Image (tube, rainbow, N blue to C red; front, side, top):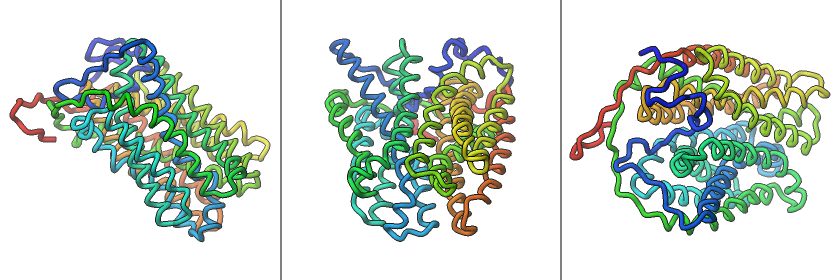
Length: 440
């Protein structure tokens, strides 16, 4: 591992100026020939394409938070046990890790735009099938939608960065806000929708509507894109044996575990504390929307530091303490803790992405490290919401889950200290010969 200045990137870019841009890692970095941005016929076509990408981002989080706020209704209506509910809330998080590695190869074969279109179609179908009141189908639909989100999670940031290089910071901000807005909208609006349509299944299926709308808008644009003839032209060696790479991966996974405990279980926790269902959903929605602020602010702050150890530890401490406050503090203070949790969690999301970039000696290593951190990290993250549900099943309440939150927080701090050091991972990029197979 090599030391690196916190103010200088290997490619000569100034990280303080490009802090938002650097959160977007291009999953197609290894592709040869390099994917080219589309040629737009007009400014209106360009704006429509940018708006479509932002709206796709909006649809990548309702799967998680819409089920959370309706979980008591779903378990009562279906007879699903607490263990079954735990598996259902955990399944899409597992999908984020399991299916993410397939995204770059799909993009090389079909093109990023068409792969995103296929993922969006699968997402819309999966969300819609949740409207059929069948437990097996609910699991199958969740699996399909989770796989679609995993692929989109990997490819969408790179497309945003590739196609809007001169306005990457603005597009990154809009992309981040759309992600949080989708999660917040599902948390806050699913219960009102349930009252209107009269069933939990109809309320879950309603989130297929925005996905289908974006699908109709995006389809002509994606199909017009010329499919590439590309292959992987680089490989990265030494990454999976590097200690720092594993610290970054575990930091990503542990902070994500806290995030998906919030998505999956905060609304049921608040309802068990006596909050009305709509109020509980509104509190979760508020907390998620606050994440936008620190998710956008933390990169510039973190990059200016000598290293990111203090930033990582402080953000984990804030997010964990706020979760405990949400579980045990007086009910009148819950809105404060919800805001504080959003501050910490939003900052952690950005911090995890920034350390991937800052610890990488070049963009190819960054892409592979991001794949490692997401593939392994999200599978690890799934353990968090799964254990929360199991603890609820074993003990009859969520109180003992506080110990789990503290344990996850302490481990995340430990990994955040390692990941925050001003070093580069000990990996290098090798250019493959034209007739040489990819050895990744």
